[in-house]
Every structure is written in structure tokens, then in C-alpha cells.
Amino acid sequence: MKPRILLFAATLLTTAAVLAQGNIHEQSSSYEWPTDTAVLHKLRTWQDQKFGVLLHWGLYSVPGIVESWSICDEEWITRDTTRTYQQYKDWYWGLADEFCPKAFNPEQWAQVMQQAGMRYMIFTTKHHDGFCLWDSRETDFTIAHHAFRDDPRHDVLRPVLQAFRDREMMIGTYFSKPDWHSQFYWWDVYPTKGRNVNYSIKQNPWRWQQFCRFTYRQLEEILSGYGGIDLLWLDGGWVCPENREQDIDMPHIAEMARRHQPGLLVVDRTIHGPYENYQSPERTVPESQLLYPWESCIPLSDDWGWVPRPRWKSPRQVINTLIEVVAKGGNLVLGVGPTAEGIIQPEVVERLQVIGRWLNNYGEAIYNTLPTQPYHAPQPTKLSGSSASSGDLWFTASKDGRTRYALYALPDSASLPATLVWQGCIPQRGTPVRLLGSHKRLKWTERDGTVTIQLPRGLPEESFALEFSTR
Image (cartoon, rainbow, N blue to C red):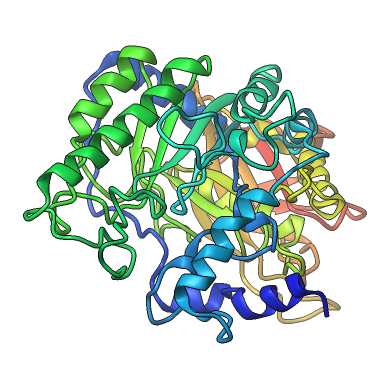
């Protein structure tokens, strides 16, 4: 086996292990609405987009391992046992001299995501490992100073953001608050102790202040030098004043950020308050409808970045998750990892194109909609006949409130039922119920508040959406 394959086998962190150790950001327990009118306007615009992409790309893409986590020394992490911890970190940092994406094609990324029906993007500028995907003045640990330095596009953040701007998408930048490569966060004088700062901030206040300045200046580079940015997505929620006094002065950062980018959405994940402009439950969907801004972040495979043997979600799984998320009042951002060479691989393109074709037919029930009541009507399992259906029916509403949409989420293993049945959300008498896409009129009846829709034979075996006016 090639050395890289051996390293992959020794270092790959499975999703099951990650989930078992709680290394996902859970949803905040409360929400505080912004008071800045420009932020509120941007927030409403973002809520209308419904579907976006979160792009993880970095050193971890070279061997195809879970992003950054293998260099953390927490007990749940497994590594190559033939190396010491320091040898492993040295190998990982050395990937900077291998990360040379000669096929780098951000225009392809943007085209694929637009074809998928995505309306906004979030790009990983720096993960916890500290490797920067822009030409930072604060460190040489950047793509612009290593293997890719001679390419005219070595400051990759600029062409990536521009490619998506050219397709009129909202622009977001992911930034990790912890930086495990920085001597101001993980100081080599001491061993590392998990994911947190590895020295006493009380005993070394100067060093922590240097880290705060470092973080502030890096964020200012991104927010002042790369054109218009709509949202700043901050990861690493353990960096907060309540945890070992890791206070990076978010009011100071937010003031600077909005001075450069008026109306900027700041998403300080899990740190509820004025700098968490929307909540971001990870790898999950809230149990019930929420009437404040939120976004489920869920990867297309089990991993955020590229890995060589992924376990993909099916297009219908993604579509059904999007339906549920939107009916519950949220947005869905789908995690996609470009390859180390710098392209979106064909298996991803194929799946995203299926999702995009579905949205071309039924997107009216998704984009620019509002949550409504009822929002969910589970469908009964068909106990007789040739096939069983256990799909769910979800509802959304147009912005003017005149139209309701009923979206049927058909599971991969199920067939379409002959009828749909729900209570409430009753179509107006004498008005049609239409199938979106074809605008085919469907037969319907209502009795004692129960609506029954007859589905015609020959419909494609896929999730779909209906439109109608309500009483």
C-alpha cells in the first residue's frame, strides 16, 4: 500500500466516533433578535434563500481525513501508532508542502452549486488547524506561502468568493476561532490539553492578548480586502468567556466587521446573544417548527471535507431534509468538500444536479416562503395494496399569505400513495389544487376539516409539491 493510504487508514476519524464524543455544535437554548436594521434586512434576505453550501477545503483534503481533528489529543481520537504525537503533528503541518491544487476551478464549484439550486455559500477560510486559505499578513502558514505559492491564484479566497458573486449568490466566510497552529493558542512550552488553549490565561495575559489581536487582524483582512461579504460564520464555540476565560472580545470584532461590511450577519455558533444572528444545529433538524432564524448544517456524505470512500446521502434524502427544514422555518446548508486537486468530483456533481432539477420543478414551495400552521401532517402507512407509503407531508406559505404549498417527502424505499390526507390548511372552495411544475389540477374533497387529494397515476416516483389557495 502507498504511504498515504496507510496514513489514511490510521488517521481517518469516523463520523460515528465524532458523534459519540459530542464533537458537533448543538443548538443554542435561546435566541436574541438583532436590533440593527441593516442586519435585520440582511437576515430576512438570507432566510429567503433556504438552501446553501458549506465548502470545507484544506490540508485535511490531501490525505482525505476528517478536518483538523486528528491533531487534537483528546482520548477519542485514533492515530498512526508508529508515530509519536509530535511526529504526527509535524507530518500534518507538512501537508502544506503537498497541498497544490493544480486543477483549482472555483468557477466549476459555483456553477455546480448554482445548478443544484443553492442560493448562498460559506467557504472555510481557516479551520482549527490554522491553515489559511488567503494570503494572511499575520502568518506564513497559508496556501499562498507553500506548495501553491507560484500559482497566480494562490490567494484562493479571492477567486472563490468572486466565482460565487458572479452567480449572484450570498457570500459567507467560515472562520475558526481556535487556531491550533498559533503559538498564541497552542504554546509549545506546554503540552496540548484537548481542543482548548493550553496555557493559563490568568498567568499569561500578554500571550492571550496577542492571540486576540491575531484573531482580530486576520478577520479584518478577510472582511476588508475581499469584496462584499454577507455573513461571518464563526466555528469553535468553546472559545468563549465562560470556558477558561477565552474571551476574544466579540463586541470589538463585530464593530470592526460591520464597519467594513454594514449589515453583516455574525454567527458566533452556540454562543447565544447579540452575535449569534442565527442558530446552526449541526447534523440534525430541530424537533419542531421554530419562528426565529436558524440553519441546519449537514454534510452530503458523512464528512465535511473530501474523503476517498464516502458514504453519500441520496438526492432524495437531501430533498426531503430540505423540505422538512423549510417547513420548520429554517435554512439548509449542505456540506461539500472539493478534492485536494481543486474540483467538485463527478459523484457530487451528479447528486447535486438531481437536487437542482427537483428544485426547478418545485422550488416555488421552498424559496421565499414562510412557515405556516399546520406545518406537518404525517401520512398513514398503507396497510393494503401492492406498496406501502410512509412519507411525510409538510406545509409552507407564500410571502403574501395567499398560497399554501403541500410538500410530500417520499422516502427512498417507498412508492407514491394513491391519496394524500390532512386536516387544517383547507383549500378554498371552488379553487384548484395544482401540482407544481406541471400545474396539473388534482381532484380533492373536504369533509369535516379533513382534506383528501387524489393523486393521478403515472406521477414520477419522487417527492413533490402542491399549491392551492386557502380559506
